[in-house]
Every structure is written in C-alpha cells, then in structure tokens.
Amino acid sequence: MKKIWLIFTALWGLSGCGTIVTLVDPTENYTAYAGVRYDLEMAKRWGLPILDLPLSFLLDTALLPYIWAQE
Image (tube, rainbow, N blue to C red):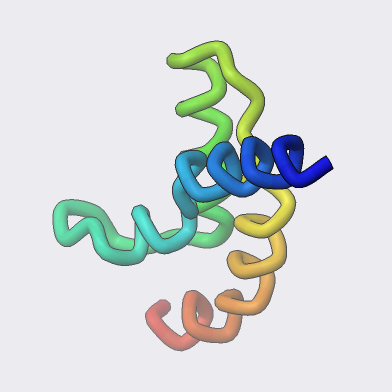
C-alpha cells in the first residue's frame, strides 16, 4: 500500500500545476481557465492523463475575480 501511495504522490508532483505555470509565464496574459487549457494541451501532446486537471479547475475558478479585475 505504501508503494502505491509513493507512486501516486510522485505522479501527482510530476504532473505540474497548469494554473501556476500559466500565471508565471510572462509572455502571455492570464485568461479565465488558462490552467485547464494548459493541462488539456499537455494531455494531447504527451498522451498522458493529467492528474492536475481537477485542481487546476478549482484554482482557476478561485482566480476568476482576479481575471475580472484585469479587464
């Protein structure tokens, strides 16, 4: 059981957070649900399921007031 949790934790950590990646990227403005879009692009490119997608969705939803304040 410990081995499964170790593998799961490693995969979770390696998946990266799409929201944070898009927030830190200085080349583009952050838009609504940019983290989710980033995760979906990475899933298409690498063909792997992105474990971070639900968390990116939640964080992007929490950041909606920030997006609206930018406009």
